[in-house]
Image (cartoon, rainbow, N blue to C red; front, side):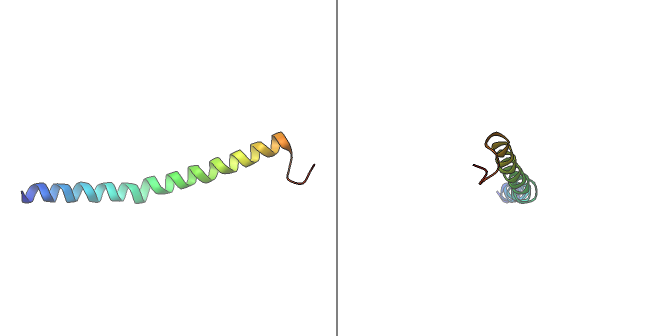
Length: 52
């Protein structure tokens, strides 16, 4: 039972490191760049704010 607990803790630590080191920064960069692209593209279609 001790080895199973150690394996679970090791897996949990690996998942935590993956989420905090790789997944969270990647998702935040994708979200910010996606929003920037959406704003840029909308300004191509509708013009800059206050142009009307």
